[in-house]
Image (cartoon, rainbow over all chains, first blue to last red; front, side):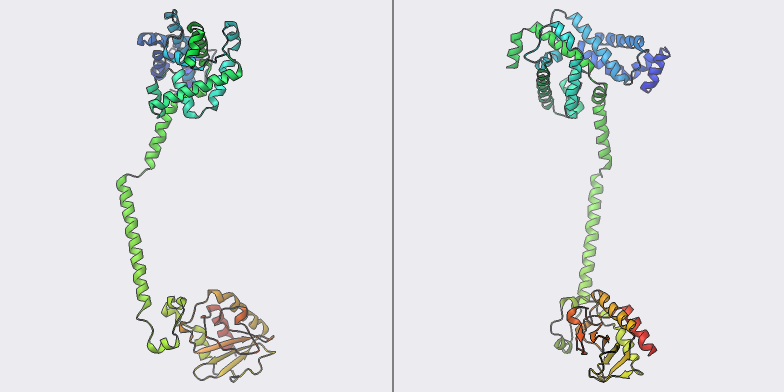
Length: 185
Length: 241
C-alpha cells in the first residue's frame, strides 16, 4: 500500500493503518531497534511503541515519507529504552562508542550549552551529509542512523568490509572537523 | 591519539556528548534516510538493467563469427574482381603506344573507357557541315564548333551562337572534374569549341588554364570522355546544322 493511503487510514482513525504499517515497515523497524537495543524482544516492544506513538501523532502529523518517520520514532524509543536499561554505563553500544571520534576536542561540557545547540547540530550534520559523495553518505546513515553492522553496510553499498571501516572512520573525522570549525559541541 | 584524548576527558562526559550527537542524528533529513534505505535496491535494479543489455557469451561469439565471415567474403570478392579487371595486359602494339599508362587509367573499367558517345555523334554528323580544312582559318570573331575525324584528317565546323558557345564552355568547365578518362588517350574524333574572343577549349581535357588555347586548334591527347549533357547539346547543334 502506498504511504499516502496508509496516512489516510491514520487520519480516518482506521486501525488497519497499524496493520498496513506493520506489513510494510516492521522488518526495517525491527532491524533498527534490534541493532540499538541488542534484544529481539526489546526491539518488538519498541516497534509496537513506535506504531502507537504514530497512531497518537497522526493526525495532526501528516508525514510524507512514512518510512523515515517510523524509523525516527523507533530509533528514539530504542535509544531511550537502551539508556534506561543501562543507565549506569554511558556510551554503551558500539555505534555510540564509534561516534566519540566525531566529538571535537574542544567540546563543551556544559549541558545548558548543548541545549542551545539542539537543532543547530542537526542542521550542520545535514549540511555535512549533503556535501558527502553518495556512497559515503549512505554508509554513514546506514551505520549511525539505521544501526546496521559494518558487514551489512558493506553488503548494501557494494563495498568491502575494510573499505566501509575506513570510509566510516574518515567520515567521522571529517564530521569532527566541521563541528570544530562551527564551534558546536 | 584521539582515543587517549577522549579517555583523558573522562568517559561520562564524553558519553554524554556522544549521546547528544546520537540524539541529534535523529534529525537527519528524510531524503537521506530514504536514499540510504533504498540504495541497495536501486543498485540491484541498475545492475539488472545493465545485465539486460548485455548479450550472452554465445551470442557475442556467433555475432563476431558472422561479422568475420561477411568481411572475409567481401574481401575475397574484391580480390577476385581486381584480378578479373586487370586482365591479360595490353597487346604488344598497344603497349608500344602507351608504354606507361597512368595508374588511374589502368583502374578504369575497360567497357566504360571505350565508350565515347560524342565521337559517335560527330562521326555520323559530319556529312553536311562546312569543311574547315586542317588549318586555323577563320577561328576569330565567330563562335564555332570544330571537329576533326582522325581517319581522314578532315576538319568540319558549325557556327555557334554566343549562347551556345557559352553554354558548351560552361558545361566543359563544370563537368571536367567528374569526367572519365579515355583508354590509352586515343580518339577517333577531336573537337574544339571556339569562342568569339579567340579562346579554344575541348571537352576532352579537364578544364584548366593550361588546357585553354588561344587562336589555335591545339593538338591534345584526350583525357576525358565528355559527359552526357555535352553530348546531347552537341548532338542537337550538329543535327540542326
